Length: 179
Image (tube, rainbow, N blue to C red):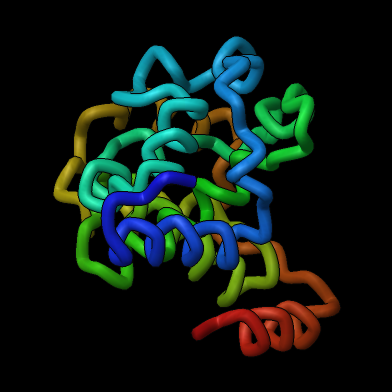
C-alpha cells in the first residue's frame, strides 16, 4: 500500500488487526456493495469504506454513517472473492469510533447498547423494557407509538421478561467480552 504518512499506515494496520480481515486484498470488485441491504441509507458503499481504510482516511471513515448503518448481515463477506468479512471490519470501525468519541449515529449506538443491556439483565432481550429505556434515552417518545401499542395489544411485547435458566452463562459471556 502506498501510504503518504505513518499515521495513515497506522490506521490501516489497526483496522486490519482489530478486524482480523485481509483488507489489503480488496480490489474494488463491488460484489459486497451489490448485495448490501444498507446502501440506500449509507454515505459510502462497503467497498468504499474498505478503500478509505486502505488509503488511511481515518477521519472520513470514523465520521461516516455507513459503519453504523451496517446491519452485519454478512452478505458482503459471503460475496467477497477474497474472503473479506466486511461486517467484521465495520464492527472494528465502530469500536474505534466509540473509543475516539466519533459516534455519528448516536441513536443506533444507543439502541445497540440498550439491546445488550437487556440481554445482560434478563439473559435474553425483553422488548418492552428495552424499548421503554431506548425511547426515554433517545428522547423520541412518540414516533412509532402506534406500532408499539399494536404489538402490545397482540401480545408481542410482554410486560414481564421471560428469564432463561442459563443466565449465569450469559453473564460469564458479558464479563469475558466487556472491556
